[in-house]
Image 1 (tube, rainbow, N blue to C red):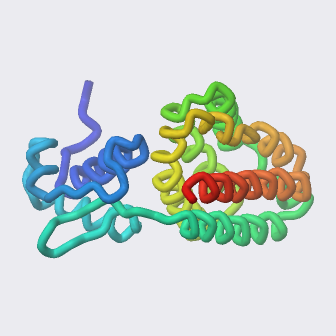
Image 2: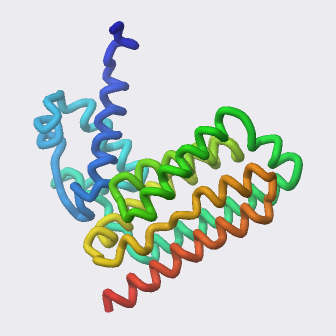
Length: 227
């Protein structure tokens, strides 16, 4: 099989950043956990330079905190941070779909991209109903990213994706330690695609509002349980 291209420092930097992001999302790197460039470089068997660049990139995404003397640590989001992410996301998404009423929304919701979005929705919903957090995270992020690319400009889509990654980083440790965490995994992805396919912007906003309300109720429950 012919290689798609050489592995450059930039692609290695991205690969390391993606791998570390996956470690955080999987809960294998926990909030507050510290590590150094040297440790990560040795773990992946690479030089320090692309590792340092990858860690700086993740810091810019607010997933890591940098300490000049101690290296890096996984950022620890608060319940208030999570509420802020949810509220910011709700305002932006509602505005996007209000701007895509009727025919304009229906015109966006067709073709190969929508087929892919529906496939992601089915897989994400199945994982959520089965309480499979490991499978859900990847499909959920891809679902929302593809949906964002379908209806919003790339700057808005990338900002929303970053918020969703941060929300998962906050949520994963608590969902894993909660015996009832699986009951709080949202599974309305398919209903959202159905509404989108019909070009029904009001129904789309209703499903998304239910999703955001679900997230905020989970945050309230989490805060009560930690008192």
